[in-house]
Length: 100
Image (cartoon, rainbow, N blue to C red; front, side, top):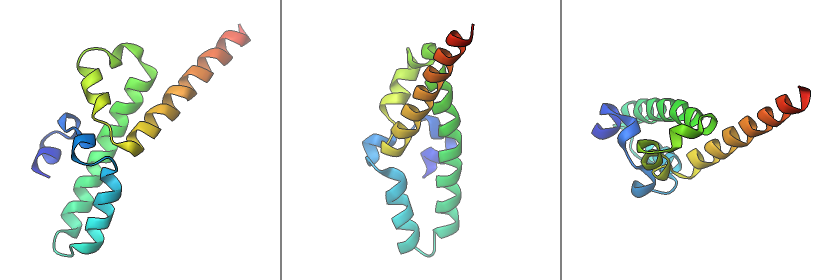
């Protein structure tokens, strides 16, 4: 939790749990005392990481270097977001090329 609060982009969530957010959701339902803090941390983490994921999905250069390490640390739902954003960007690029 402390690492996520400090910099959510630097944490390899996949290493912690393949379905990190689903695990977090279950923990919220089990641990009443930490509920607000846990929800806030998970929400902030998801928001900040999703912005970064979208950037990497539409910017191929972002997946090089340090970006590759970040992408390797995505948990499963984040990987689905990356695939959807990447596929959408690719389809948009193809559509623009067709319209020219």
